[in-house]
Amino acid sequence: MAERSSFVVVANRLPVDEVMVDGERQWRPSPGGLVTALHPVLAQQRGTWIGWAGGDGEAPEPFELEGIKIHPVPLSAEELERYYEGQSNATIWPLYHDAVETPVYKRRWREAYRLVNQRFAQAAADVAEQGATVWVQDYQLQLVPAMLREMRPDLRIGFFLHIPFPPIELFMQMPFRAEILRGLLGADLVGFQQRLAAQNFVRLARHLLGLRYEGQSIQVDGRKVKAGAFPISIDTADMERMAADPAVQARAKQIRAELGDPETVILGVDRLDYTKGIELRLKAFRELLADGKLKVPEAVMVQVATPSRERVEHYQTLRVKVEREVGRINGEFGRVGMPAVHYLHQSYSKQELAALYVAADVMMVTPLRDGMNLVAKEYVACRANGGGALVLSEFAGAATELRQAFLCNPHDPDGVKDALLRAVGAEPAELKRRMRVMQRHLRTHDVAEWARTFLNELGVPDTDATPAPDEG
Ligand code: ADQ
Image 1 (cartoon, rainbow, N blue to C red):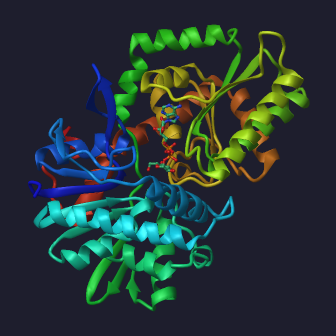
Image 2 (image 1 turned 90 degrees about the vertical axis):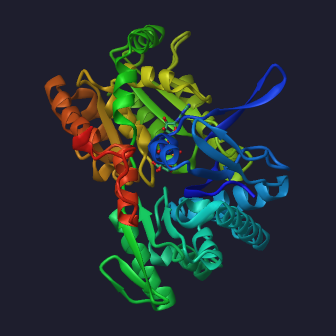
Image 3 (image 1 turned 120 degrees about the vertical axis):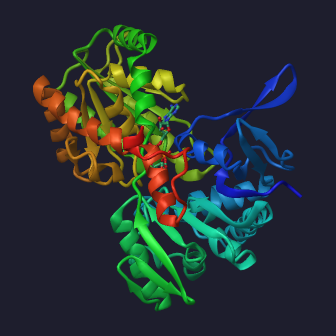
């Protein structure tokens, strides 16, 4: 049996990547916001992270990396198709994002979801020591809290949902809705990005299961389950440092030069996902070019669209639509050697992304619905010189905090065009003022604060590894 831990994180993915060195399999940490935030607590408590390591078939043996115990859970090719691509990404993902694409419901996907959730719960039950804290992450694992409580009532269980939680009338579409809700109610604390999502959740508990609640606290079988909003954030200081790095600054200049030193660089950075509003953003740009309000080569757009969930049908269709729109814009408005839209269907290092953020005059973040959207926060953190404008959808969680962005309704094409034009034409002094307010917010509300606030609410006291902000 694996060595036990007093702090356990359960997430679909492990924070590691497999690399081959001299024909030998090795693991290296894969940098991400979540692991950055949780690393101090995990390292101090010799914590364990349970998750899938990528690949199908047998899982690698548990191992340790940079002070964190890594506990891989296997997924077969069929489970990947049914639990991950199917139930998680073709049923739950679209349903929780306002059904902007039609959710697909299949019995065999649900069965696989149950089975895989049971496996993750079992792994947590095996590695958690008596009275340990277990923090379950995200929509792929919503049944884990109840399954785990059943096996280990001694544990303190937290759950955090990174994506939106839909209103009752949408959630009610889900065929095994009561089971999902009971799954989540197995936790002591259920965290959401937004206050509205937490409200949807407590109201749903009353509507669907007749449970009583007071404020954000639901009574379940004589227990209290708390719901709350914990808006996630980024490692702001790290992002600021990276943007200030001379190499990144030089690369940003080079990017602008490579784009032909235009007056206005408009940037989009997203996973290629239909919730992100990439098409509507391209359309707004095309119409402004057609209206003569923007001109090539004075204004150019760069759209980075990271490959994502490529085996799911919705995503294949989206790729075709986005690439067709890019082709149309370049066909109509580009010139030889001077495209209007530079489209990059690739993954980049954090440094290269930071250079793009530094290079961009206007950042467009226009999701139809988004739990938070960290790209918006990363852009703000990279604009230390105070320039730059953020066009931000009201339907991104980030819009609750980044009030000084140029906010827009992504369902209203004229509204998006108007916000983009206002951003392009804003006075430098105004842009500086807006950026400064947002930067100040992100310096205190960073990802470490997010983790600390959630864990405190769950009843885990601050440790030396999770200092309060005024203690540095
Ligand atoms: P995502 O939907 O993946 O996350 P987002 O919050 O924007 O969306 O995070 C994307 C991350 O990927 C950012 O850190 C970004 O820098 C990085 N990234 C994007 N394109 C990249 C590229 N080409 N190469 C390398 N890195 C790239 C989900 C929810 C969000 C929520 C987060 C965190 O959908 O709403 O903010 O979880 O809770």
